Image (cartoon, rainbow, N blue to C red):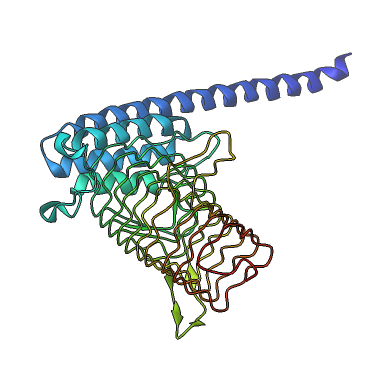
Length: 354
């Protein structure tokens, strides 16, 4: 019994040491949280300053807090998003016409650009925990965001009605983002992920969408005139190793594709017309495609029931298994196009046996 006393004493000493370490760790954690709270309060005060430099300091201080403390990330996102909505709100007269672009304000204010940079490049991003942004009806003209692939995270973001005209946006993750009526005219939106995003009524005129993915995105009623989808396009009917946007499965009913160039673009399984067989058909009319070019485009399985394809260029296009029932192909160029398994009942302008 006496021999076991040294062992018991050692055990008690070890237990005491562990309790001391645990207590010290707890005190350190409380101290760190207190420091973060103080930093947070100071940053919030800086955001309300009349000095731009002080406001910038507040923005970047919140960014550091967000990266240092994962538990505070949702709060910081809410604060910074609210800051943008307050300080870069879309003027009331533009809410009905978000497609306007002002030459006088083609670049964002420095503090707004700083907020967007902080939100987009946070290191502690966790898709299962992160809070989606609400930047709806804000003026973000000319904002610049660029990073490595999968670095800039805006998945699920609410950008409804936002003005992003002439913005430079590269490698953004906008998976399932909410973008109806967004203005992306003359913007560069390259290398980005917009799978399942909603861009109904979006203004994409003159935008560069090269290498961006729009798998099953909803582009109903979007204006795509003058939009760039590819680099290294088709020259003299030869495909020159194009680098294109991915438009597989997109909904383009009601969209404006007048004279759009979709040469070599993958639009397989895309819906250019409302699917009236669906319980909830999207759109009221087929896309407007006068003068559109689909040379060597992949239209496999595309839904073109009743589509007006008059005068379109379908040279070398893949229309395998496409549904062209009652479509109008008068004056369309179809040389070298593939129609294997396509539904051609009621097609006008070409022989159903084609």
